[in-house]
Image (cartoon, rainbow, N blue to C red; front, top):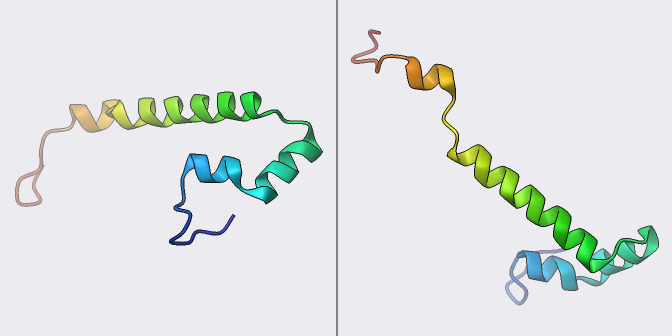
Length: 67
């Protein structure tokens, strides 16, 4: 899939890309299956971004390089 100004890089653009659809058909992947996997991946990324690493949260804030 190629990014251009006519078709912005998005999930919807990926699903309408002819090469993506051809590969899905060759692999026997349905649209519903791909959407399900992409939603799971999105949820995992969102959950990871919300977490604060335990070690980083317990460290004192450094001031002037001293901690």
